[in-house]
Length: 179
Image 1 (cartoon, rainbow, N blue to C red):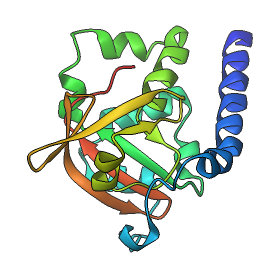
Image 2 (image 1 turned 180 degrees about the vertical axis):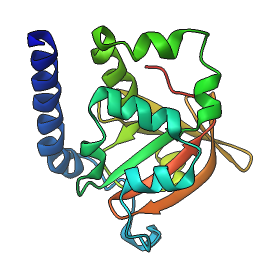
Image 3 (image 1 turned 30 degrees about the vertical axis):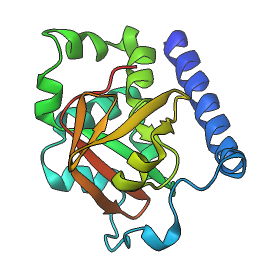
C-alpha cells in the first residue's frame, strides 16, 4: 500500500507540474490551435462522459480507472485525447494489456496513457500542420497527413476527428500509441 501511495503521489506531483507548466509551454511556442478554427464545444459532457457515451472505449476507460487518471480528465483542461478504441487495444500483443493493468505496473500504465494526452485543445488538422506535439508525459509524437488521413507516429490513424467535449477534444485512433 505504501508503494502505491508513493506512486500516486509521484504521479499527482508530475501532473501538477505539467498542468502548471502548460501556460508557460504555451508562451514559449505558438498557440497549438488558433481559436477561430476551434470547433464549438456544444457538448456539456467532459471527456470521460463523452467516452462512456460512445460505447467503444471500454478498455481505455478501464485503463484510466486502473491508473487513477479518470478524475484528471474530468478537470477543466483543455486536453486533446488521442483515444484508442476497444478494437485498437485488441491489437496489442496477447497479454500486454493484462500485464499493464496489474497494480505493480501502474507506473508503466500511467506513462502509456499520458502519451495519449496533449495538455491543449487541438484539432486533428492543426496537429498535422504542427507536425509534432508534446504529450502530457513530456514525449513528442509526430502527426502527419497521408492523403485525407491524419496519422500519429506513422501507425495510428485518426478515425473520428475532433469529437468535442466540455474540456477538450477527442481524436479517436485505431492503434494504441506506445512510447
